[in-house]
Length: 92
Image 1 (spheres, one colour):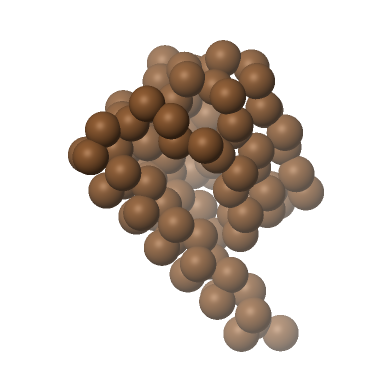
Image 2 (tube, one colour):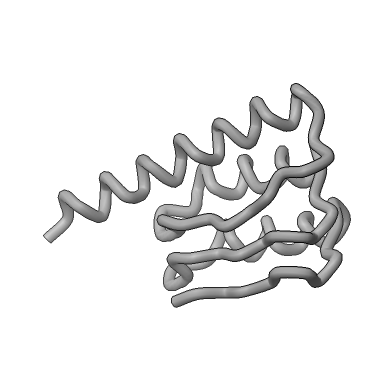
């Protein structure tokens, strides 16, 4: 299941609510977040949510505007998504 939130100007504040929903999500596999003004704080929230979310296997997000600190969390997000992909590959 895909949720396309591209170009909705969610911002870091909206990412707080999205992250809370992702923590309890059990069906969403793809999330599109391009052009939403999500910066460092939003990247931190997404990384935190994806620690518990085990279903997201694809994230479409241009992390423009993040600082070096935000990129650290962006890399963490990529690693968590890859773990989810691997987990799904091995479950039968």
